[in-house]
Image (cartoon, rainbow, N blue to C red; front, side, top):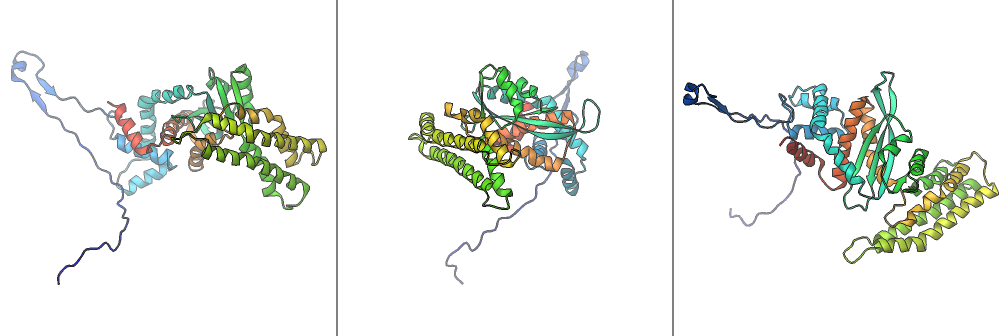
Length: 389
């Protein structure tokens, strides 16, 4: 039969499991007879290639894979250990943990200071914190709840920074110490631990609180209420509606306040916020004040607590109007710390405080890379390769 044409009838996406291989490096030794007769150094060898850890089989590609699996895909080391055993590589989790700790201490610990220095070049910082359990503390007592803090740039910063910092508690002294010397706008939730930082700055730090947190207090009333038609839920629904209009204006600013090249125009954003957002917020705060004055709800009800929360922070919730590069929420920090909280569900705890510090360092490197559009595994492999040169 004569062939007429060739056509593609199907395409299948195939999978080839990852493979491990050993890269063996050899070198020749040379002997100089003349040097030997003259009692000089007569044996010559080429220098050994640089390695991550002396007398260890770990390579940049292997360690980058281990780190990515744990800190990006939240796979604990005991699961990676089982995967390696299934692949015929009998490496136990203790060895994997030692690799991560020693390489970070030797090559990457000083590198993590660079994102912190870059972060302080900007005058807008987001902050958030979340608990982490540490089994073996410096005090040597029972397991203790400590905290992982994150500090990040706004989503409009040209270079995105995500800096993680492990601390032994949630005291106001921790952000005060970290933010020493910072001047600008600090975006946070309603946690009072940041008040001391703002107070000690003597006006150099202006706090912007999160409107999403304020909205959540009223939205939760609607979720939990069985009777959707009582006075409390109706008032909560109106509060949510008012705040939703603020977020609609922000979406409008994202689409309309750009120049010809598609870059965000700060002056247009500020003008739009003052024209449309400020009247909405004024109406919202007046609405909340009216609820409080009319005593429409019980003092300890959810609605009363939400109203009091908003009124106590009215100035902080409005401060974003002063600067067009301020954000209306603290979602940037919350989204930054979410990968850690997802990993915490799998890891459950850190065994030592040193391990928590190292985890913070790896999260800093990885989440900063991801925020800037880099592939975490490739970036880590490059970084580890360059660190031994």
